[in-house]
Each structure stands twice: as C-alpha cells, then as structure tokens.
Image 1 (cartoon, rainbow, N blue to C red):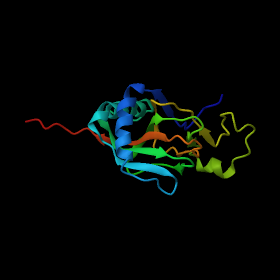
Image 2: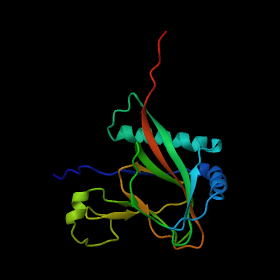
Image 3: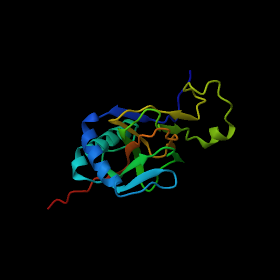
Image 4: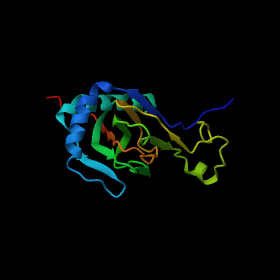
Length: 196
C-alpha cells in the first residue's frame, strides 16, 4: 500500500465570461506603468467595480478549496486581499517565489496567452527533497521525482493554489505580450453579530 501524503493542489478552471472586463481594466492600469528590470509591467491594485463578479468568484472558489482541503472554515470568510495586473514583454519572466503577509490562496486569471509565450510553473515545496533529489528519468513526464511542473493555459483560465506553493513563470519568447491578473486571498474571521 502507498499513501500519498502532503499533496500540493493546483485548481484550474475556465471562466472566459470575465475576459472582456478583465482586458479593459488591465489595459487601463497597464498604461500607467513601464517595464521593470525583468521586462515585466506590474500595475497597482486593480479593485475595479467592473471586476466585482470575478473577485466574488475567486473568493468563493478559494473558500471551497480550503474547506475541501480539510480546513475548518465554519466561522471564516475569504477575501481577495491583493489584485494586480501583469504584462510580460519579450524575455519577461518571474523567478520562483511564494506569497506571505496573510495570503492563504494565490492565483492567476489569464487574459492574453500568445503562442511561444510564458507559462506558469509550480515547484516542489519540499526543501528536504530538493536537497537530496536524484536525476529524473524523463523531464517531460510528471512523476514523484518532478522538481517543477509547467502548466499550459489559455485566455479565460483561472488557476488557484495554496500561497506556500512556490511558483514562477518561464521566459516569455513572443513579441506579443503575455497578460494576466495575479491575486492573493486572505482568510478572516466572520464578524460576530451583536444581539440587542
């Protein structure tokens, strides 16, 4: 018998119904910024009213995801705490990182995904395995030996995972920009109601 212990969950679903609003808001916010040293444009917070349905969807899916993972959510609520846009120009990329500062769920909503573009990557979070890992037989096949996994996406795809899961993006090799919304979700206590 083999027990699969301490798994890492990546939830992927498609919601193209939010694409037109996301494109409009993202375009408006990206006009205000210039590419950084990594050839990435990163917007300020984009809590725009026209994206309220997408924000509600993200909070709802995050709640269910945490509940399904076994967390006691009976007196808790989820709240999208950070919500910003990113655009990768040619050679743009993100190195492996995690999100802290109270984030429980992290994710992306993909807006523009050109051919030969950047793709999201999740990395094995087990530091002990990284220290003693052996060479993999086949880097193209996902196995227990995998150290990183590249995930294919399309416009309208929504991806969510626990904020402790290391993630990044491969180098963008297209002349067309790669655009997505990046977000973090926090968990808060449901406010108690005073009885008078």
